[in-house]
Image (cartoon, rainbow, N blue to C red; front, side, top):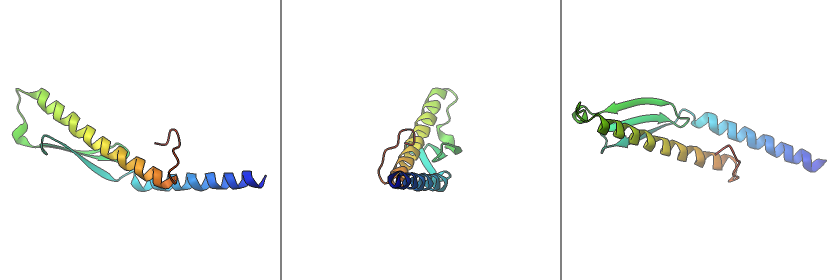
Length: 103
């Protein structure tokens, strides 16, 4: 019975650590870019887009597909960076344990 209580206490501590880290990093911002900085997207670690900047010189009304591709590339760059930060911080919070559904 004592082992179960210890296990429950460890699980509660782990859960508290994870919640604390999630709260600390949720608003941390990452920058994704494309086209050598022609498109820049700022995204929070929890996936909320904060801003998008498009340099005027790349706006070509006759090539909207290129601009769409640059936006997608910049977003994906930011999302990859955000996911990496989240995974690294969760590994620290869990002591390296991989918990399914957490990261």
